[in-house]
Length: 65
Image (cartoon, rainbow, N blue to C red; front, side):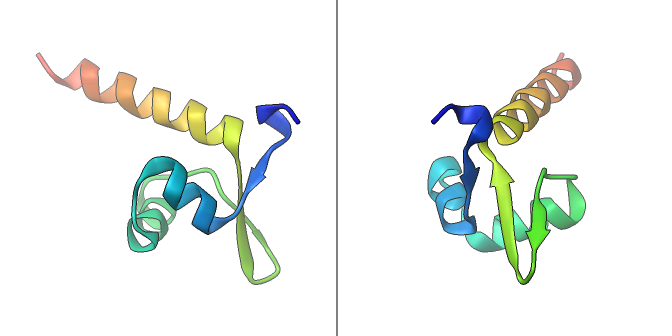
C-alpha cells in the first residue's frame, strides 16, 4: 500500500508524530491539521500529514532569521 492511500487512526498519528492525543486535537482545532471525521472517528491520510508537516517546517524557518 502506498503512503498516499494510507489512512491512519488517531492512535497511529500520535505514534507517528510522537505527540499526545490532546496535542493532535489542539492542532485539528487551531492549526488546520488535515483530518476527516468519519462518523465519530477521526481519520488522517499519511501523505497529507507529511505535506502539512513540511509546510509547517517551511513556515517556521521563514520566520527564523
